[in-house]
Amino acid sequence: MGLTVLDAGVIIGFLDNNDAHHLAAHKALRDARDRNDRLILPASAFAEVLVGPSRKGPKVVAPVQALVRRVPLEIQPLDADIAVAAAALRARHTSLKLPDALVIATADHLNADHLVTTDRKWPSRSKLKIAATLTELGSTAT
Image 1 (cartoon, rainbow, N blue to C red):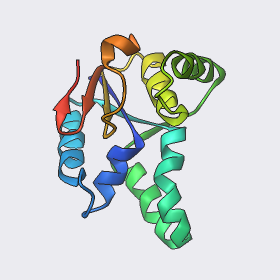
Image 2: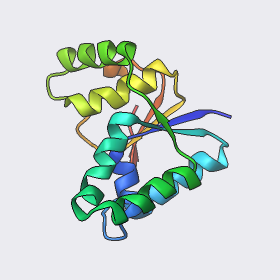
Image 3: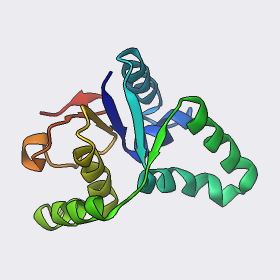
Image 4: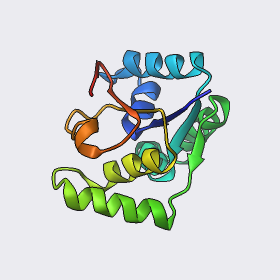
């Protein structure tokens, strides 16, 4: 049993049939479940996932929260260690946005086996200096 950390775009793609990453997101979640991985969604990414539904109201947010419980996704709180690591990542990689740095720092902090994103602009795994396999939906980065 391993541990897979998911970026917000993976869950957004999973939820939206019209999203370009919909099928790949389903496959990524299925692959993680087939490996019996624990699925982790950083709290910061969970907030990103909820922005769109929140614009439409509580009746749209509730099914997303139900999905989190059903899958199940564990929501990983942001703590001081993750915040410090995310700030360092953001400082080293100026093209990296803070929400992305928070997800990467969470994966590193938890010693994740896999980190899945839809963002193709992240630095490579070797540049990030993380142990987790970094998968961009549709391709695998090394």
